Amino acid sequence: MQYICVQVGLLDTNCYIFFDNNRQGVVVDPGGNSGRILNIIKQHGLNILYVLLTHVHFDHFLAAGDVIRSTGAKLLVPKDDETALSDPGRSLISLAAGGLGTALKSDRVLCDGDEITAGELKIKVLSTPGHTPGSSCYICGDLLLSGDTLFAGSIGRTDFPGGSFEDIRQSLEKLKSLKGDYTVLPGHGPSTTLSAEKTGNPYMSADGFGC
Ligand SMILES: [Zn+2]
Image (cartoon, rainbow, N blue to C red):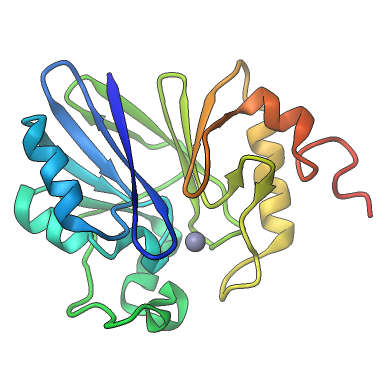
């Protein structure tokens, strides 16, 4: 399995392109710059089976329509964020210049514990609400795609519509309880490891929420 991270859009969202040895792949969070994403897909000769969203905020899906139209990929969206696809207030799309022409439609909604198979890739869904109601992390091998739930040294905001600080606190507990270590690939900023965040991230360390 290989992956490529490409920073896209005004908010430097990390879009990840994963693919197996047979070049079957998925695109996670295509938040903008569809041309760059499609170029990478073409350069590597990838067959993109799915576009996967960690949550439905515009900076994570603005290029999803273009990628889907060009590749024929199916759109997979966390169940509790699905309605946000057609809700500008929740997707924050009203903040994005130009907005989105037509609302995206999901081909399948994802629930906690679901598994996605794309060629040789096996991706497990972990519901981690808080940043948005449907926010989800995806585990692929020893990689943990954390969306806007967990960043290196920080966590996602909970003050957008549908956000919940109590929910993200519980979601972080869920991530802390994962056995073994993972390379964490967040929706923004540098990659990190789960073990480094468990000890060094104030929101994850034992007394981080004690105030
Ligand atoms: Zn977000």
